[in-house]
Structure formats: structure tokens, C-alpha cells
Length: 629
Image (tube, rainbow, N blue to C red):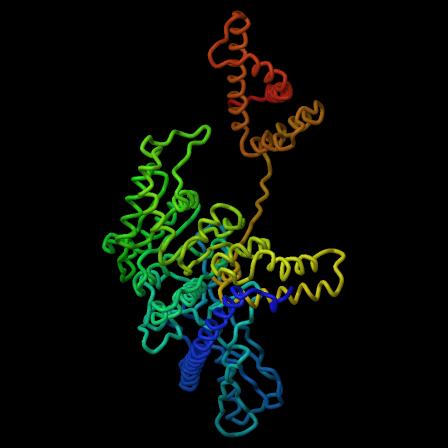
């Protein structure tokens, strides 16, 4: 089966995506040219400043200022025979030029002076580790090549080479794909503002991030917000006439997907006509989401610590949370009604959304608390359930965001059915690096954000899953491998427009260098004697079948013998208490003392022989030492 045999719904979905990509690519082409010209102009300005400083002789650092003894060095070519440039100190260059002017000749060339390393940035840890300064927002700096010709008696001519196109372009990273992945262009402007709708139509106003977020957001996060804007909104002009599209933000763990979504929700609710946003997430992350919204988008800027660093734009929409604290149907309905009326962001868990969207009241489970009596009357709750179903599903919110999108990995699960009933097509799925997911889970996520884009489950399996899996077997033929690569390339090309993948490689330039130090500490004579005694007893009696338990005892010896001593004393007291309880039970055979189960005591006695032997020889090994001193 190939692309020519797809049904009309799939072909229509792919055609719409091709039209959207054409609009976006036209905008991106224009933006790339503008940004490239800006980068070239910026580089030319730096080059011009460098030339002027070299001609005026202002590159020599002031010797009278403490801590400013950086030598000024330039790359020079002392002969015109095409030799490689050499790094020469400025003072050596002046001596060379003065010698040439007086008519003296020198057969030997000046020695090469190495550029001294800059003082290391020291981290506030125990290790003095050099930290790489983070420069993700600046294009790679090219060295100024200064060519000084000594073949003529005229004044020296300084020529600074132009940066080549290869130096301007960043090498393509195979682990990062999608739109807006070139972080050289994901930067703020000269005023510190971050423009979101790059390549916008002429009639659209500029859309900027909140200033408090623009000060801390990283380049790859700027690209993620722009990527979501291009897919979900496209342009402010098309937002009201187009049903919109969905996308998958597939960033590795720790790259700040939550901050990107918080930033995009602020833009979506502030700049578009959208009114309601629903964020569905695992219940254990709900409190973290609420804290992130309150931290980056505070309602009262004066009380926010972000105001200490600059301007803070307050949040102009409400934040609603629907969790297990709302136990009754009426309490949940009040939250949903208020969210639908006032607008804003609703935070809800997957299980809660499944129950409310399918018009189901909470059911009791074995070992769970009973539900309130007012929720047992389905007829009474039916109007409330219908109203919540209308707000959550049909027509539902203007934007749906699903955190941990791999939860939608089973197309037959009730949560998948509940999510696909949402009428809006503006859907965002957050997930980790998608190459860790299998192809069927991948299809489930793609089919949620772009229904029918990859065909049905059977069509996807025939076109992509089986050919790719057949080419990965140990006995795959060269034909299978070629087909696998072709189908994988086609799948990647189909998903490139609305799936942005970023790996941990984007943090390579911002994270400090990791330094590990191993300190070998010699044991004291007492520790060595205690350690040898313990190991000899272990070998002789074979009383410790589990090496992890023996290692735990050794750790106590290595740290300090008092730790082992206190451990043995505590164990001895526990054993004495157990013996007292057993004696009490033996004196009264017909009674069962409180807290003692005769059956468990018998099993414990049978299973504890190894421990008793261990405690015995540990006590024996300590008996010859005075641990009180």
C-alpha cells in the first residue's frame, strides 16, 4: 500500500498541511533573509570597529589597571609567500616594524606568542571547574585575520577577511528537527523583546512575550513558542477564519516545556479572540503547573520577585484548577461554569476529564471511600453533566494542551476516545523525545493533533510500521533496508511541519562542564582491624548471602565505627524486646499479646537465623575493642 491508495479524508488533511507549509515557508524565507542581513551587518560593524582600534593603536591594555593585563594579539602574515598566519604579540609587531623602518634586516622570524587563557569562571562548588560562558544568543564569532604585507616600503595594508557562508550557517543537528530549530535566529531584539509572530502579514500587529519571560527564556524555548504559534494561530488574520491545526512539542525532559506552554497561553489569550484553554495532565503534576503559571504570570506584579529585575506584565486571565478536592458533581460543575463564563486556563487531570467528558459520575471501588449521596442520583446530576460536557467537549475549549502525550498511546482506551471527541482542532501534545516511543504510539499522538493525516491505523501499519520494522531485523535483506530508509524519510518529511524535536544537545553551550573527583581516604588502624575481622567472619561463616547487606555494613565501618556500634546496640534492643514478647506468649498459651501474631513470629524466627548469626559475629568482632573511647 502506498500514498496513492489513501482515502479522501487523509488526502485532504495532507493537502491542508501542504498549503499551510507553503504559507509558512514563504514567510520563513523572507525572515531568514532579513535575519541573515542583520547578522552580516552586525558582523561588519564589529569588524569595522576592530579595524579602527587596530589602526589607532588602542588595543594595548592599560598596564596601570590591576587585573587588566590582557595582551592584545592579532593574526599576522609576515611574508607574502602564502604561509599560514601566526599569532604575534602587539609589542613584538611594533618592534618588527621599527626594525624594518631603520633598514635592519632579520633572517629569523619573531617567535609565536600564545594567547593566554582568560581567567576561569569558578563555580560555587567544591571543585574549581572551568565553566563555559553561555553565548547561545550570539552568532559564532569569526577571528579577524589581519594580513600585514612586508614586501613593499609603503605603509602596511590591513585586510580583514569576510566571514564565509559556511561559518554563518550552523551545522544541522540530526537530533533536532522541525520548524524554528535554528537557535541563531531565536533571540531577542536590541530592546530585549522577543517577537513571536515572525514573518507576519502586514496587517497583523507585533506579538511579543511578556517582559518578565523574555528576560529568562532560552533560544530553544523561543523556537518552541514560535513553532506553536505558527501551527495553532498562523496569523491573527487567519485565526478567525481557519479552524486551526495541532502540533507536537517533542522536547526532551528538562528543556522547559512548561514555561513554553505558559508563555504561549499568555500570547494566545491576550492577542487572539480565543477565550478558553484546557490543560490536561497527570494529576501528580497539576500542582507544579499551577505554581509555574503563578510564578511567571502573577496577578499582582508588585508582590512578585520578578519585579526586582524589571518590568512585569500581569496576567489578564483566570486560572482554574479541577482536582480531587472537588468531590461532588456540583462543586466540579461550579468550577467549569465559572471557567466557561470568565475564560482563562483550566488545569485538569486525565482521569477527571475522562469521567466528566463521558458523562459519568464517580463510581466506588474496592477499598475506596464512598462517594457523596448527592452524586448517587444520576437524574439529578444529568443537567450538570450535560453542561460540563458542553464546556469540555462540544464545542469545548478554544485550545487543548495534553501534557505527557504518550498517555494517548492506546487508540482503544477510553481517554483516547474522550479526547478525540473535542471539537476544536487546535491541539498541542507535549511529550519527551518521540524516538523513544514506538510507531503505534506515535500514530496515536499524530492522529490526535492531525486527525486522518497518516491514514487509519491499518494504513499506517502497512505504509510505515511494517516496512520500518522489517528493515531492522538481523536477517533483513538489502532491499528491506533500502525500503526502511525510504519509508522513514517519507514519514519524517510528513511530520516535519508540525512535530518539533529537540534533544539535550541544545543545553551543551549553557551547562557548566561536569568535573568528577575521586578522593581515596586511608582507613585508620582501628577501622582496618574492624574491617578485616568482619570480612574474615563473612568468609568463614558464609552468613551473608546478599552482598548488598555486607556492603551496607562495610559502609558503616568506612564512615565511622560509632555508626556500626549504634546500629548494633539498636538491633540488640529490638531483639530483646522480641524475646520478651515471645516469652510472654509462651507463659500464656491461650492468649495472644497485643501486637504479636504467633504465626508471623514463627515465620520470623525461622527466617531470622542468618541475621542472628550476623549479629552474633558482629558482636564478637566488637568485643575485643573499646568502642567507648
